[in-house]
Image (cartoon, rainbow, N blue to C red; front, side, top):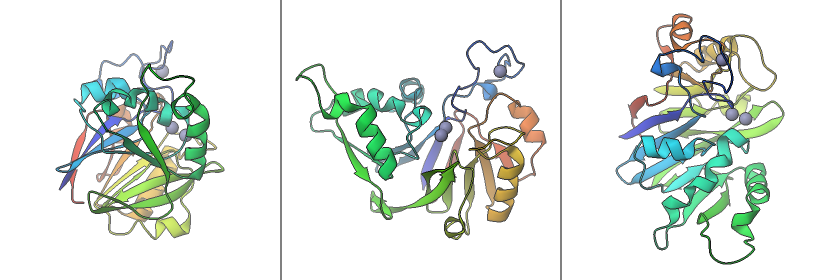
Amino acid sequence: MAKLIFLGTGTSDGIPQIGCKCSVCKSKDKKDKRLRTSILIKTGDGNIVIDSGIDFRQQALQNNIKSIEAVLFTHYHTDHIEGITELRPLSRFPGKTIPCMGNKKTIREIKKRFNYIFSPLQKGGGLPQIKLSKIKNDIVIFNKKIIPLPVKHGILPILGFRFGNLAYITDASLIPESTMEKLNNLDILIINALRPHPHPTHFSFDEAVSIAKNICAKKTYFIHMNHAVSHKQFLKMLPVNMKPAYDGLELDFSW
Ligand SMILES: [Zn+2]
Ligand SMILES: [Zn+2]
Ligand SMILES: [Zn+2]
């Protein structure tokens, strides 16, 4: 068994959005406070994080994360990688290098944007100790398999991941047929749903629900929402086996 914790379920601005006076941003419901989208997978052997975005420090403190054995990146947008800097305290222990994985474009962009880590001007100051590697095939961590799920985010090729009977896809606007074939027999599907009206690079609510119906997991949870609709309003719009995720929600699954 493994445990999944939603560290964040919001789109790139987070909710509340700075300066916004809408009813969702002003909502008192805790489920309407959304940090940037990220999950923690906890197993008896250690922890894996998918995406360390801008809110990673806050998320790690709130969830008492003391160790990370690997970070998997879905893609290189700021809301998904900016927390690389915050991996420093988790790699400070002697010899602790955190493996960080992503597709070719993600690794290339991380090397460019975090140049200070890979080509330091001088010794001292302390740097996050991370080891980048490109995901080409299935990944094995803790002797268990993770299947990469190539999807499209507008024109950008990005990755989702399947752990046993759980699949995690964020920021997608298209799932190719070859990936749909890898999404059979799921207990849990986690997939992005930005807002009610269409968007060029993210699934809208209707698109996400219709894809989730096709995939037909026992339960579906939506992530990466913006402030157009509250948690309660979105829940009312969904079939019984589908729910909006919220920050702090925990799920047990077999992996
Ligand atoms: Zn995003
Ligand atoms: Zn708002
Ligand atoms: Zn993105």
